[in-house]
Image (cartoon, rainbow over all chains, first blue to last red; front, side, top):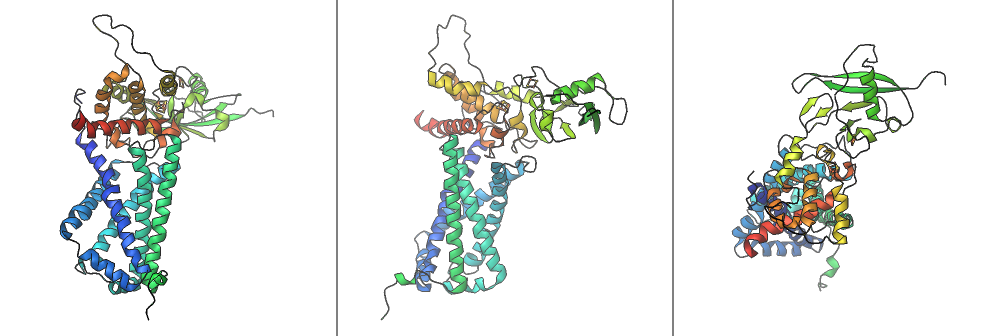
Length: 219
Length: 250
Ligand code: SF4
Ligand code: FES
């Protein structure tokens, strides 16, 4: 408690890192992932080509571990630690922000579990060579399908609320009006990710390619 | 209308921090514009429970009776608020009255809020103007800063914002919204700004501003309508700038 120090506490730095990694790289990766997988909405071949492209990026292991797996592991692990140090009281004080506080914790845990399983089935078991065929096969299993839907919704919600939290907690949205706008922006991101995620799932489940008209006519 | 209207009040009693707790119910004579403090005074006048059992007057803190001293915060029907401004006619009966849960109990409804005063000391929530010689006049305070600072200066250290915060609990030492808002107040004052980096550093220590998880309960619970979420956001911005850029740019 020496008040003359000017160095922030480790808990301060870890907390900031937790907040930051949620956006970069974890949130950014989620955006990239949804974007890449959207190619399934065009065609099977387009998806396989995108998948192939990603599987052959240079420095793949370093990018995967340093840019995706480890930051996610830290964000999730430290997030659980933060959860354990809070004590929710939403039944006594059922305000919107308080509800978001609680749901942010549950959706975080669901997303973390889902992503772990998703990585295991689609990255580990396939040795990083997933194809449209293999994903579509998985989607035939109703349990897999349900977990996909729940996982996508939880991740999208967590990202949307996370963006709101981030903008407030770094003081980028400070006034009441700015925080309201930040909340609307977060909601928009959450809804957009949910919709896109569900469309991708539908594409795999029903072999549905609404953007196939973009492809040059085959004659 | 012959019979007099009654007010039923249920109070959590506890003789000391280590004694067992029990609830006692009282039936009081209703009067116009009665508030919770008046109920507690009525009980002190005639400490007999609804069941006719003789008991002791209830310990509690209060002073100004006009929501300005901050001492009478308690849980009324489960919510943290000031007893002196809690009007009986606006409360569901029986009115349940319990002590705040995030501060050490002294007795009955009286709690010890020393933690808040220690935190205020820790962040130097004052403007040092004493010296061994006359320091002369300080810089003028612009009307904009006066206008921004005034609402913040209304804090009565009641502790409601800590009581409702999910991040304030026995697992961590989070200082809470009031203290962060005071740092903002003293940092925006031109003379106070001379200790800005010290205050920010103290707020980046254990239990500092990083513990805020943006549940935003504080701003709903503050009896003085202080823009606490805005204060936290602004201090947060100053803090990370100091932490991140301080060692780069000096
Ligand atoms: S900020 Fe508001 S709720 Fe918190 S101690 Fe001050 S007056 Fe009470
Ligand atoms: S008695 Fe002073 S605030 Fe209630």
